[in-house]
Amino acid sequence: MFRSGKGKMTKAYAAYNRDEKIRFQSSSGGVFHALAASVIEDGGVVFGVRFDDQFRAVYDVAEEVRELEMFQGAKYVFPCMNKVCERVGKYLEEGRRVLFTGLPCHVAGVRAYLRNADTDRLFCVDLVCHGTPENIAWESYMRYEKKRTGKISGVRMRDKSGGWTDYRLVIESKGEEAKSEPARKNLYMRGYTKDLYLRKPCYNCRFRGVERHSDITLGDYWGVSARHRKLDTAGGVSLVLVHSQKGADILEQAGKSLICEETEIEYACSHNPAITDSPDMPRCREHILAQMKKGIDFPQCIEPYIKEKFTVYIREKIRGLKNISKNR
Image 1 (spheres, rainbow, N blue to C red):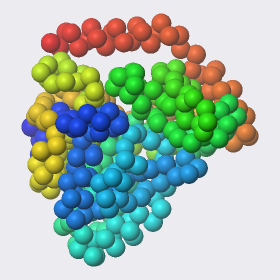
Image 2 (image 1 turned 90 degrees about the vertical axis):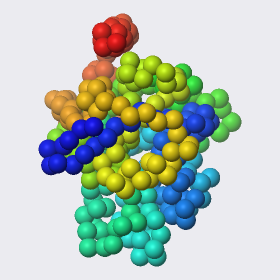
Image 3 (image 1 turned 90 degrees about the horizontal axis):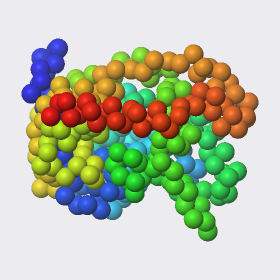
Image 4 (image 1 turned 30 degrees about the vertical axis):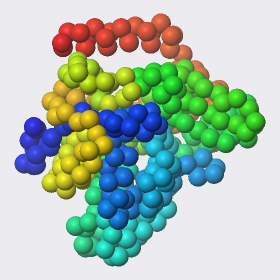
């Protein structure tokens, strides 16, 4: 148990969905699906982020469990709010339970918008957010992929066919074999993880930290196997931070669908620095974005800044494994 600076209590858990199909389709352990399904089964609605037909990220609402699939899987794109605050408020006025899942800054925005409303039936879940790319970066990358693959019919940014820790970005095209590439080799993901084109506020995010505006925070539990050796970690494990009694209640309600163990919050945070730390803004950011706005092909915009040898990646992997071994 961890006591935050303002006196709140946050508990941390390692968890994953008992349903292997749901777990595989999810970025981490499939905890979101369990929370969302429990709200819908109780007559509520769930807000989350999906891709539209142009592969822009947008908030939408699900009223049936089968609709939750559109929210599963990470979208490393800044989502359009799409009047989501008004829509959440409307459902609350109707007496419905509402689960809102989104970026930490968007959860704070929803809370602020509804500050004078009755929010007893509102549950908020935010994500451990590395930062979100500028829209121009995703648009530039998609133009590049369309030139290579033709009409795109689907995108999966955290495909687990290579495993949870070695996930892949998959581009699907009608009538063509899907293009699958390890994230560590994919140009867009390499630029993203190197912080080349995040939105400016992400470099000094005031919504990071253990204490949040949400009831629950979800993220990847990196390094989990060193602390929870009996858990099946291969398929992905979620880190669940519970910040409020409402968060504890909804996690308990979804508990029948989950394998869940309490964990050490300090250890979990040390293996996922995005919980508390903002990335540094690279000097090349403005130049890269200016090139993208001119319509220069995506690879030409970022390749000079991501020429990291594969041997460097392997060395970092080995170093991480050694650090985990030391903690055992």
